[in-house]
Length: 237
Picture 1 (tube, helix red, strand yellow):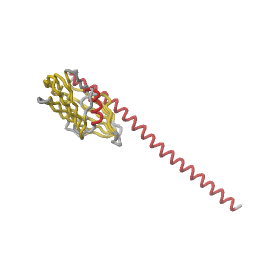
Picture 2 (cartoon, rainbow, N blue to C red):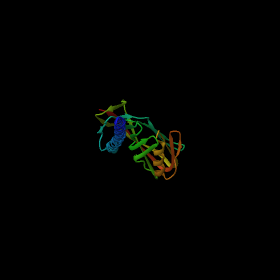
Picture 3 (tube, helix red, strand yellow):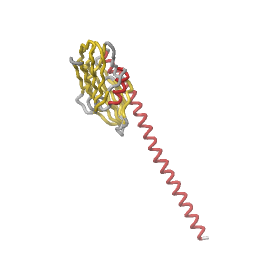
Picture 4 (cartoon, rainbow, N blue to C red):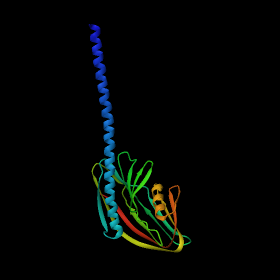
């Protein structure tokens, strides 16, 4: 009888240990899955917010408004400013124009995935590359139009769990005409996200663009180039 009593106690202990371990596994995996779902939803909401930001910047670029405000919910995330993007347009043997643009980005907790607004485009950047969600509106043909939305700021960024208001104001704009008269025109975009820009520009020009380091280079033949230069000051409140 004593041996049987020990056997029952040992059996109960083993069953209890098994139950505890299973609860621990379910709890741990469940929390991880919940975290991933929340991060995915957070980035989806950020994409929607950046669509609104993109529309507001388009309003400024088109002259519909001089200033706009876009509210973005953080939820343990960050809105900041990334590495400058340089856009350069040059006519073979002739004139050129160059602009330096500061991207605005949203990053979740792991900072591996970012939603980025730059030059009127919205991109989703991940560890394995970037995808252009909305394009910057370059126009190619006998008349080529290159938008340069020169975003600039004195701030570094905002992080936390509240909301941030992205204020965009355009103090100045101009149109630069570069006569080409059938010459080759070279467009360079220097950016960390060369893949997305190369795919976009190659599709728009109908010919492959080259990539060297962080610079995408495309060539087109056109009669006239118009560079729409719009300075946009960005503040976070």
